[in-house]
Image (cartoon, rainbow, N blue to C red; front, side):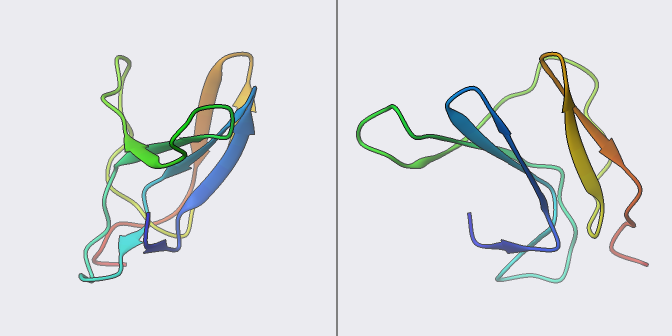
Length: 79
């Protein structure tokens, strides 16, 4: 996805991008994208999450713990 100030983690054969600011806006989002390097065609997929979703944010960090993506810090669009 074309975003800035997002976070990215690797898990198994995928990269996951959370949040940030989409290139055509100045508003933070809480989208979760997946890029699976093993699938064809290779493309970014916007995922529907099943657990609690963090609020929209930018400038945060992320890590993987077990099979969960943990989001920490950042700020909303207001700063």
